Image (cartoon, rainbow, N blue to C red; front, side):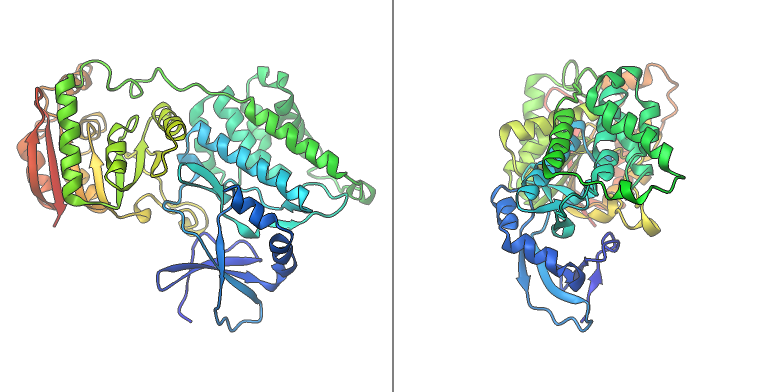
Amino acid sequence: MNIIKEEGSFRDPSGFLFWQDGTLYRKVNKIYQNNYELLINSGLYQKLIDKDLLISHQEVEQNFSDVECFKVIQPEIIPFISYPYEWSFSQIKDAALLTLEIQKIALEYGMSLRDCSVYNVQFKNGKPIFIDTLSFEKCKDGSPWVAYKQFCQHFLAPLALMGFKDVRLNQLLRVYIDGIPLDLASSLLPKKSYFKLSLLLHIHMHAKSQKRYEDTVVKKQKLNRKISKNSLRALVDNLESGIKGLKWKAGGTEWADYYDGDSYNQEGFEDKKRLVADFLNIAKPLTVWDLGANDGVFSRIASKAGAFVLSSDIDPACVENNYLEVGKNKEKSIFPLLIDLTNPTSGIGWDNVERKSLKRRGPVDVVMSLALIHHLAISNNVPFDKISKFFSELGKWLIIEFIPKCDKKVQKLLATREDVFPRYTKENFESEFSKYFTIEFSFQIKDSDRVLYLMKKN
């Protein structure tokens, strides 16, 4: 059998994901048989499916020769795999609340989550969904919640740091792939966090307890202390209350207010939207990456054209507002994501492939780069030849806007620095991009010196 194992699915002894002939499957090992049968036969699986909390699967026939195999399932495909260091505050918060809701339901069916990794959550139809079918185990009477510490490190700690300290601290999840250590979170949180009961109990006191017992052999009678199901439910309720109480208000950043002021007049902005819609009608994409999407105005045009849209931006406030808009409008084909194109998501984890780079999760049908080129070329000193090569590796078509030096936004970038960009010209832009793309159309936006291009990869 010619199978390709999914690189991020090797840690769980209960089974692994693999690809065969372009289809994703999951092998379930015999070691998980009893828990799998309980998950299915108890009604828990169907309950979670009915509530759209867990990814669905079908059981299929596969001829595995090894004796470990119990069953093979075919899970529903998620349109784009993302990671928590690419999520906004509310995305992580919703993922945390989803996990706790699943744990509460599981307890009702005599099961419990044994794995509360944030990587077990992805986004589908604008909402978080749990993707690890093999994370459930029979709830043993009197046993503690084995995933409690993991939940605190993967969800509570990042949310507390984002809400109380700095929203950018979700980037610590890039460094600590197994969750932010609680002693580190405790040391970074301000003193006022001690007055929030959930953080006092689940981060500060939890971290001190870990420190106290890290080199101590815990007596057997302590390990055998019974914890009632009511106590487990109370723990989950307390965590849920604490998560719901964490807040972060987006706004007030340069990019969150980008369309206010001197970007375009109304006629020019409407002309740009019309041109983008026309270009999308020509390309007819199923997948679009809107890079530098801001609040997602043009992502929504691509979505209405029938595409699944990754709507990314460098600004946490933009991504947060975009995600809240997706939820408000119940939009199913727009996925806001936090991406810094000057330092795009790299491959991390074991052998640097366990969590994929942004580039490896492409290519797509259309890349959109609107009101972005001047930030890359002038703010970050990235020359056109490198930008054009990078975009050519991401998609088949490119919708890109050139903003000349005379534009007010470019003048603003140059106001506090020397103009050392003699090659930042429309002619050089077209020359460098023509090495990788054929320019199909170009139009000057009304009442503007900006030019919008539709390019096709050579």
